[in-house]
Image (cartoon, protein in one colour):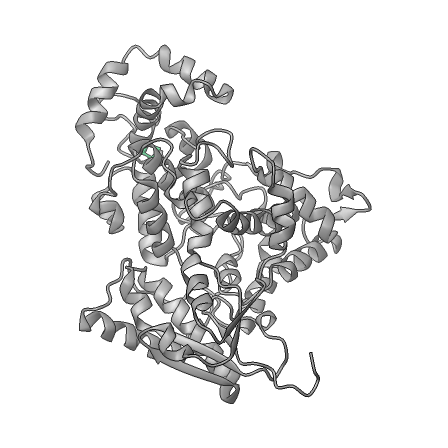
Length: 500
Ligand code: SF4
């Protein structure tokens, strides 16, 4: 680049807000707020708040360098002038910027592995396993490596990281929690107040509707806040993260999770800086290898992997429906109506989602996704629901997570078997079942657990598709041994779409 040439104005989307999306410290910026984007879909109220708050905070930080445009459509702000933009994160946004003659599209930022490197790895492979991608990324980036060997002598500490929640300590009052310090919480400011007033007004005007409840902003909306959240997590919570990352507690939604997925997906943190900070904590004796590896796996492994699958698997992948699941989402689920549900796990998770716009990955996969899979709900509709209802949900995040992993709708391109489980799994990994009106071991009758009955119903419905999968052979043999299968199937038919 000619040193004296002016740097082109950089158009930043609302998920490209960190410094790594700019080339220089004085580069001029265009930020666009589109009300129509919020009117098109029914987002969770707290997601709309977080995105708008982050966008406006960034505009305030950039001050005179930033042209901030509140318009109806993005094209109203871009016009036909010369702009540069980092590769957007959705196919729709990419098509939009490619249509504008003055816009130069740069390679993607905010992810670790480049698109060409991922394609070179994926081309010609049948099943694209995360573990293979992850190990290559660890080697290439030199993360948690001791020479040629993985730190701690193993690539994978999943076996150490599947502990059920600890039993409540004797004599301890109050509801059972993990007992680690609370997450870092932001302080709202006048920008948040203005966002709240605007969202209230938009809703009153009738053209924008939300799901979920308003509440205090829980996630970082600025670079400074994101760094504080990262440091707090590393200092106070990282050490406990790994062991209990798959566990659920009814009264502790946050457990030892980092809550960094939201600022990462807003582009406020670069994934490599998070990974390096976590590795430093391990090297400095602040965290065991199993905890550090678990975080690195989530970010360098899984996050990059689902990003690349979104692009690599093509525009038809999101419509995959290999199990022909065609039922629409019932209203009680779509509306996060936790009070309509008696099943304690599902009601509790829906309530947490309604109140925070977030639950961690196991309630997403093993409660919400598992129930949808069992009930045969449409994967594309479910993907859209996850995208709208979670503060960290974006199209690129949810497609592979929901279509591929959670709903097995891609015919097994990224997983070896469906993530279907009965009440026994939830009972082992949580404290939900004790006071529930249902019993996790009961299949038929008044106390039949809807997850247990739903699991067998699912296996029966898809016996044909699953019979060639050797990992499903044992569950299918179990299905053959059920003496009460006819009664169970009749019970599930009668359940229909009623809340369990
Ligand atoms: Fe959920 Fe079944 Fe346990 Fe109730 S018994 S909490 S429905 S898994």
